[in-house]
Amino acid sequence: MSHTPHELHEEFPEHAAKITSLKSEDTHFARLADEYHEVNRAVHRAETNVAPVEELAEVELRKKRAHLKDEIYRILSA
Image (cartoon, rainbow, N blue to C red):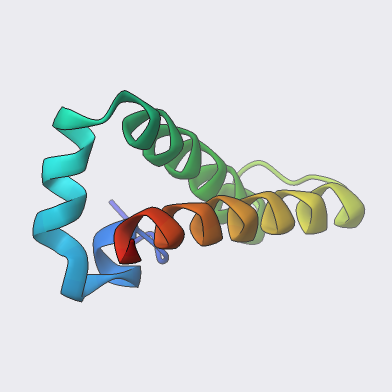
């Protein structure tokens, strides 16, 4: 199995415990984390040509991942 970069615990190691806690206690956060995970995997599959997509679609996936990451960070740092 290959390593997938940009997992939430890797992106925010200082918030690892809080991420785990919020996933089980906050349904909104859990939904954001799940969506981030799905988009992140799609980006990784596109970048590694496992599931190639048009360049514009890959850019849009990266933008969506960045937006989700920003929203997650906002919650973590509140």
